[in-house]
Amino acid sequence: MINARTADEQRTTGALIAQKRGDLASSLQQLQKLDGGQPASKLLSLCQRLDANLAALEDITTERGAVRSQITALNDALYGTNTRLAERVAQLPDSRAALEVAANGHFLVNVIGEASLMREPAQFKHIQDSLKTASDQLRASAAALADPDINAIAAELAPLATGPNSIFARHAREMFVATLADATIDENVAIQRYLEKEVGLFVAAA
Image 1 (cartoon, rainbow, N blue to C red):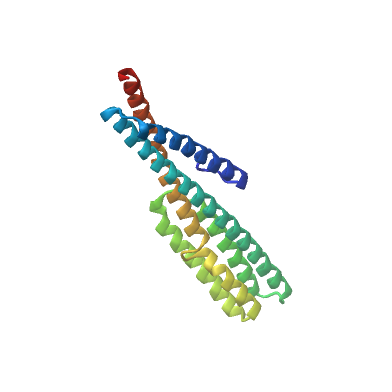
Image 2: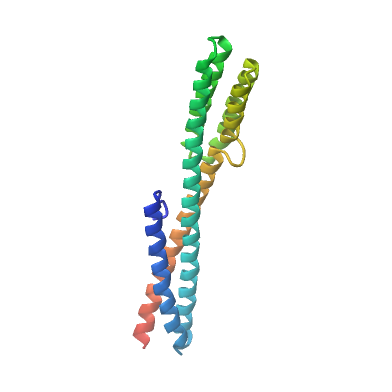
């Protein structure tokens, strides 16, 4: 549910959570009218916790969709910019410097792709170092070629590789949101289980 990727899936998930919150709101209103003593009070408290949990899931779903959209846009920018780099290099006379720029651009794209597959936080420092090295190599080879267009395109690729708004940073955020989603869903299951038990006790005592 939380891992909805397409816009349609995100809308469906959002509508489902909104429906559940609507149903819960009706239950809360009914419970608030009851004078059932401690059992009713427990049910009311659990329903309020469940509502807060669903609100958190709603926020997580929204952020998950936003981060996924950002990653898609950044990847499009990465491949488009690298294509422009290759096309500009192809317009230049053959030279070792031109070949190095093309190779370093391709290498940077590959490292960013590998970084996107990382799932273990222990690997983050290593991949961040690799991204910085690949980015620095491209920048240095572009500077050595001394072509203004090449330098400008290389400068566009740099923030896609490193920094707070890089593709890797967005993937790291996506992983954090996914972990948060798992914990929130586990809490949701626990609350509903406890709520079902309390409802059974409340009905039996009525």
